[in-house]
Length: 175
Image 1 (cartoon, rainbow, N blue to C red):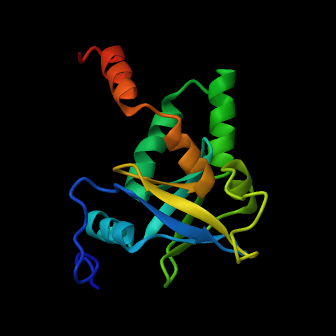
Image 2: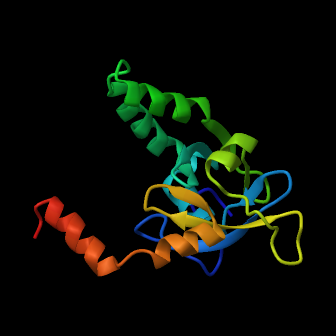
Image 3: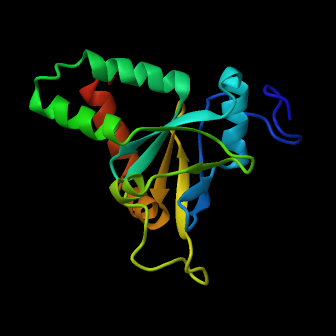
């Protein structure tokens, strides 16, 4: 596969990273990025050759293509570092940031702290596999999130999508 050509039979999503795909966090803290997301990364950011930035998120680990991370980083740097909330956020984000390149199997390797902060490990191992944990790799248009699979399912069950759309658009003054 060239840097710009998706794998045969697949097409990068024109909207970017969308959908969610189950994967595994293995015993050495690697997660394989699903092929459909690798294709989007290659098609939209070919000059970065699979380089991504991993940072903590709420109940997940966020995976940014490098150019998207640069925009987020600039937004964080513009905030008042004397504000205790900003200082705390910057400390956690920058203190746990990791830049990496997908390995030949399209995996990223997380740090132990990222796994802990993202609450990715279950109390009990995946059925029949005591060395890995089931995770969901979730598209967010311009970035990905890695969630513990059970936490992702619970999160989805707790949301009334129609109500959420109504609230968000109403608060934004769009309805």
